[in-house]
Image 1 (cartoon, rainbow over the protein chains, first blue to last red):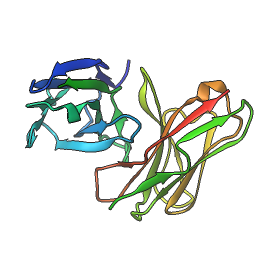
Image 2 (image 1 turned 90 degrees about the vertical axis):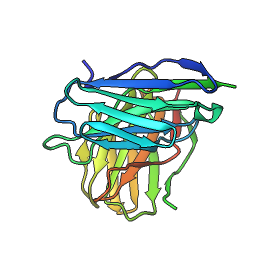
Image 3 (image 1 turned 60 degrees about the horizontal axis):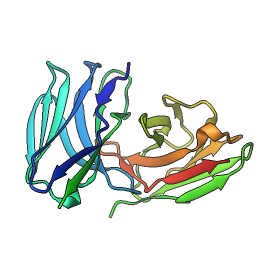
Image 4 (image 1 turned 120 degrees about the horizontal axis):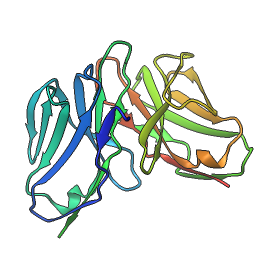
Amino acid sequence: QKEVEQDPGPLSVPEGAIVSLNCTYSNSAFQYFMWYRQYSRKGPELLMYTYSSGNKEDGRFTAQVDKSSKYISLFIRDSQPSDSATYLCAMEGGVGSGSRLTFGEGTQLTVNP
Amino acid sequence: DVKVTQSSRYLVKRTGEKVFLECVQDMDHENMFWYRQDPGLGLRLIYFSYDVKMKEKGDIPEGYSVSREKKERFSLILESASTNQTSMYLCASRGPLSYEQYFGPGTRLTVT
């Protein structure tokens, strides 16, 4: 069983829709939770970062972490065609983990004009 | 501006060849990483290094080795390339006080 599970999609939505992307994880030692965005033929870039449980908002993006359920989400409001990309969740923490990240498989999102 | 560069965007090699993938970062970061990315499997850590001449195995080190002789440069070596090493290879770096990993653009390697 993978430590981090993420539905790979693909997910296709119309412009302006609210998008919900999710990951579940099994390692309760994870404390740092991130979302990376990867455009086609590019490397991933950090989009959002959250420490422990709670919400964090940045413009049209909201990241949520529920450690009790081992579940994290990324919401995109008023989605735009420029949001079309693969979104990867990533997690870090635990004794001996150092600076290693564990990534989800990534969800491919297409926002149609 | 933060920059991680990789020596090639696309590479085609034959089975059995020795392959070098190079990564250079200009941020004076201590930590550097090599991942491979495959459909259905996501990003998997091959090796990482937290200092010059230091290296640690990641989740899938078999068939790979690494070299870090200078702080800014981290090389991934495929001693004898095999077809199952056809993949996208991504390099990343990270500073000591930061949670963010900065990725290069990737090298798509095809082994025939």
